[in-house]
Image 1 (tube, rainbow, N blue to C red):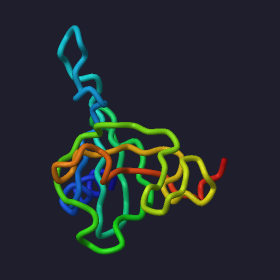
Image 2 (cartoon, one colour; image 1 turned 45 degrees about the vertical axis):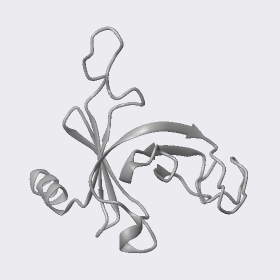
Image 3 (cartoon, one colour; image 1 turned 180 degrees about the horizontal axis):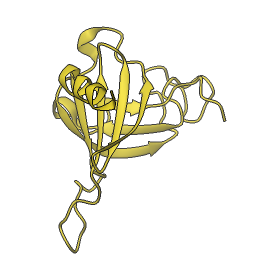
Length: 128
């Protein structure tokens, strides 16, 4: 049953994010991948699947863009990690209880951006 679920997630995947670290997944000395982590986000079912070294570790519900086109489709890398990122559009400081981005931001290099437009993030409903 688990294999069927994994295949379904892969087939139905509309947004895939390769999570290999901010430095492009390379170590300075060995030039080998730092890890084998993969996040798959299914926009249709609003589910996030996290794989570590090819093993499914967790599947969690997520929210995606308000409209279908607000969540880009493709393979992306995490290019920055920010704790308590401000919500610039609403002029809400980072770490504030009204900040819809939550406490953590994983910025993606989607659509030619530098991790400042698209990201995987928390929300302001998080518990402390």
